[in-house]
Amino acid sequence: MTARILAASALLWAASWFGCASAPSTGAAAKAAPGHVTLTVVSTTDVHGHAAGMALVGGYVANLRRQMPDRVLWLDGGDMWQGTLLSNRFHGEPMVKVMNAVGVDAAALGNHEFDWGRDALFKRAAESAFPLLAANIERSDNGAPPGWGNIKPYHLFDAGGVKVGVIGLATLDTPTYQRAGSFPDVTFLPLADAVKAWAPKVREAGADVIIVLAHEGGRCDEHDDPDDLSSCVKDSKLFRMVRKLSPKTVDLVIGGHSHRAISHRVGGIPIIQAGAKARTLGRADLVWDPALREVVSVRLHPPTRVKADAQYAGEEVSAPQAAIAALAPYEDKVKALRSRLIGVQAATRVTRNHHAESELGNLISDAVRGAVPGAHVGLQNSGGIRADLPKGPIRYGQLYDVLPFGNMVAVMKLSGAQLLALLRHGTRGEHGLLQASGVRLVVDRSKLGCRGEHVLVEATLDDGTPIDPEGAYVVATSDYLARGGSGWTFLTDKLAEDAVAIQPVTLREATEAHLKALQARAGPVDSAEHPLLDAAKPRVNIRNAKGGQRCAGVRGP
Image 1 (tube, rainbow, N blue to C red):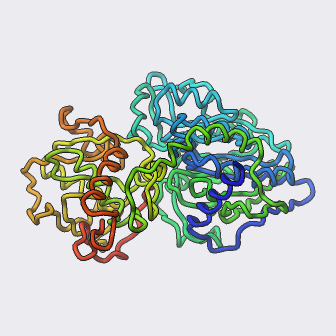
Image 2: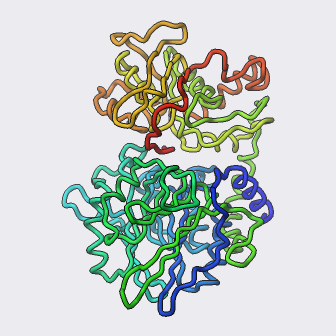
């Protein structure tokens, strides 16, 4: 059992690391001057149900804790539970068991923690041996914290005799996500406003050091110089929040949500953010001067790639046995379902692309459109496609990894003007490129701007007919998008109630049915004779692909 989990995990994480420019951290503890106290903060985020990976990260942290007893805090940036068959089948329970076993100290409340509704959220929070934090959620009637038990604004820790206050933040996008509507009695406050309001209260409660743990993020591609922001998305939501804060307000910010890494300083405030799926570990070493009663230095480590055959903090890494034991019964229960063959063969690896037309994007948008008789157009957000399909016989677990969220097919009745507005929005890039069926689009990236400009220069139906602004169109998509996800609220909030209808079929079911139909019609899927993406006739023709500026976006949902 142990060997199987760790071997599979190591292969997945090693293949998926997106690189870091400097040498990986050895895990050695920073040396402090006599009388100073070094605190180490490690971060994970957006683990999305990858429990075996979290167990292995536990080995890294255990090594650090043996080297630095009582001076290591493990803080997670949220979106812990949703995303794998193993975790989803039990509404996140396996992830809670593993995170308890490895000793996570606190976690931000991610938007996907809301996916299974109020009862599941409160049950998982109550089972967690660590607090879930969100200071920017308050009751709509009186502005007080919502009183959700183990979900609270902040928590105080004693680390090596230093009082550390951790303030949590939930992304402001949370209400647009699938199940957040189950919580109509709360309001989500702007992030910086919440930090400014709570930081003095946390200081008054005794905190010497303040850390902000936010389920909001950004992106930096190079990590050899924390003060060089040239590889970063400078207008990211996390950076915008940090620029509104004073270095005297907080000592460290930890991000999440964007599935990218950060180990940089913005406006004098250090920021760390791990990637996603327990593939990387973020770390910062804070040196506390008890005479001055302040943090006098912060060392930001480049993100550390998580792998099974590694050494860290002077020891070999191995997942704690308690975490492996916690996983075993859940693995056994889903093994047969995950390995079930669906009766379809992939001729080659079927891939996704967050920023361009992709084989998987075409497959899924075609499947959604095919599930709605008479639909003119099928639309799928790139962020909802979470894995590639490997070459060979397709198993249910592999299809589940592609579409883990359980979204339903939705039908929208739109005018041509409304459809064009969605296409303009979906090609600008903040949420990746909208994957589409039934239309042909021309996009000019040289026109890209981050403050309202659009890049769509031509839009027709498949047969070349221009989309008529006065016409009526049936659009098939997901309930996530139809309810306002990926920024669609600019349109969905204005639609009549009968303009959207949710169908009794999931995207995963529609895609499985479509795959079987393709196999029956033309043999193995995505063959050279019948490619899912025809480069000679692209659905989305992108001109000046390297033009324009990089807008701040998220990988969501």
